[in-house]
Amino acid sequence: MPQIRFRSFEAPWTRSALEDCFEERQERSSEGDLISVTIHSGLKKFSELGRYDNSSEDKSHYKKVEVGDIAYNTMRMWQGACGYSPYSGILSPAYTVLVPKAGVNSLFFSYAFKKAAMIHQFQLHSQGITSDTWNLKYPVFGKITCAMPAEAEQAKIAEYLACLDRLIRSCQHKCGKLQRFKKSLLEKMFPQEGSDAPELRFQGFRGDWERRPLGFYLETAREKNLQNTYTKSDVLSVSGEYGVINQIKHKGRSFAGAAVTNYGIVKQGDVVYTKSPLRDTPYGIIKTNMGAPGIVSALYAVYHPKSCVYPPFVQTYFELDRRLNQYLRPIISKGAKNTINISDDDALLGTVCFPGYEEQQAISGFFAAMDRLIAASAEELEKLQLLKKALLEKMLV
Image (cartoon, rainbow, N blue to C red; front, top):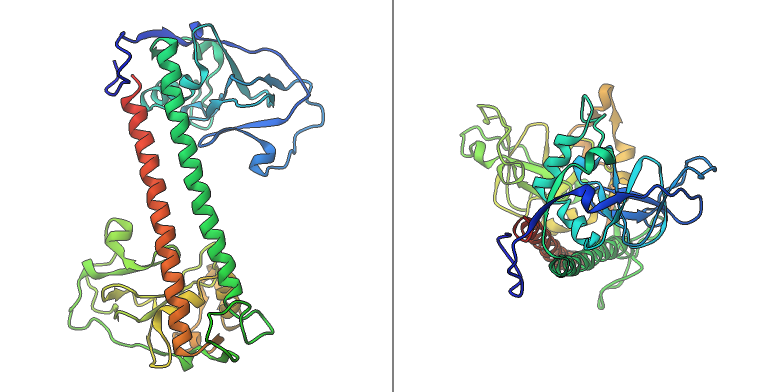
């Protein structure tokens, strides 16, 4: 029996071979929506995934799928690439389509197939030399056993987990909407190219923003950890998502060498430029240290803010990848192996367009509040996903 159960059900579960629960659908069709099987989202129409259909025009050999069927990717079943079909359509011949027999709730089994113990069984029964060639065809799939309750309990569990899935999707939609809204405001609340005033502005602020070298607002910091005031536990990393953050908190451990005397000291409010290229920011990233003081590798550039700049605003200004890349591209030359060649001082030579100090504070405070809202939404989503993972283990045998 499962660890968690609805009160109205007491009968023990039975273990059955999957061939007694499902039969393989053999029908072929070229008519209907093209469907794919994903690892994390189950069955999705190509139109929902935004994918381009690059298969041949002749789809007469494609497999038919109906509402209530389960389909799985024979090469990726060991990774959980399966799902319940909420619609009719056609699938690539690489997929297997399962039709539930009498007394079988296919939605229940779509969740049961995601349980860790079942994933392990799919992995053990997949045939092939390496994980790239593992394959689980239906005849072998049918020999695997799965614990199942009576049909009424199957339906109750499936209904509950489906409701939780809807809640997760709603939370994902909320997170995505907030992030898109923030990106839009990072565009509209800052001057566009050719303009010195933003499209959207807080009431009470007027006049053009000022275009000046970044060095007008920042100065290169040259303090080193020569007295070993800070240790390996104080090493900071610079992340595109989390900003300046303690390396142990971010990575789980410190990657610093035995000696950290040559590391640069970063005070609260200092600005750090890491010259490590990322996919969306090929010239590095610029972040402000909002937390405790620490140290960074000598490969990082550290800057003290001058009195005319509100330090968090520097990070907010460069948070839009496009604006950051536009600033860095003209002043950087790339060397062999994609290395970034620029001195700490020269990184301040580019031009920025900043408002007055009070408006900097207002803008930074607004985006800080939005970041807290996004973080709370992301935390809610994570908790729901962890809850689902736990329930899959405790509500299923």
